[in-house]
Length: 104
Image (cartoon, rainbow, N blue to C red; front, side, top):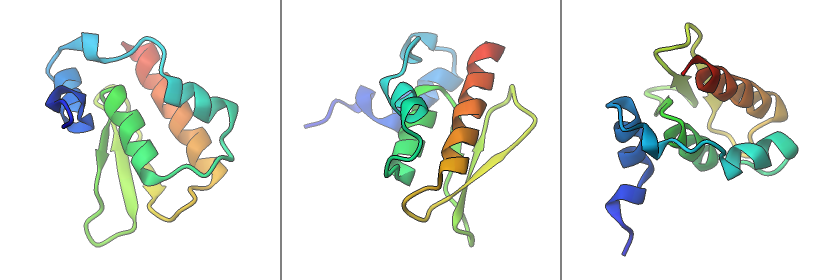
């Protein structure tokens, strides 16, 4: 059985409410994305990466794009659900996560 503390939703809530220990200094997933943005990345990878870094990744309602946002960023990134996610969206996500990390 999975430890509830390991769920992406729990990590995201912990990050939002100030438990910064749950945000890794180095993320293996982020580094893998950075090294190979052409990989067959899925929306679940995007959701997990966002949860690791305290970034909201909201499920679409009436749309096929997820909205990625963080209070420290003015921009809202949209990522399509369609698989595989194109390289341009992965690169934008990496830049967004880097901006969030540098703002902390």
